[in-house]
Length: 107
Image (cartoon, rainbow, N blue to C red):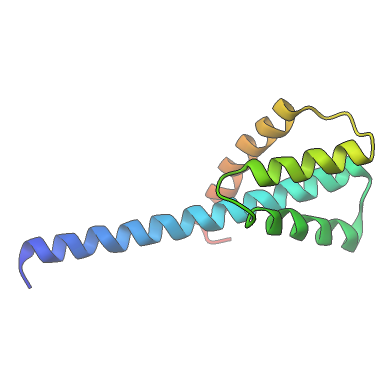
């Protein structure tokens, strides 16, 4: 195998690892967001864990964060919880940093 091929293979492996970590961080962020939203909605215990799983599952509806944002906003609206879209987006940004650190740390 030539040096070029070895380098190319190395870059491909790094890209695959980076993408996997990104996926895991986004899923973890969505779980954390679900737990945060559950608290705001007055959901506790196992029901909060189940709600967090629903938020994670919502992310598979379409590419991007819009599906998760819409789900959480709709749930807040249904229960008359006054949380704005910018607040949810800010929480998502905060939690992606936490989740990425947890994924890199092996948690």
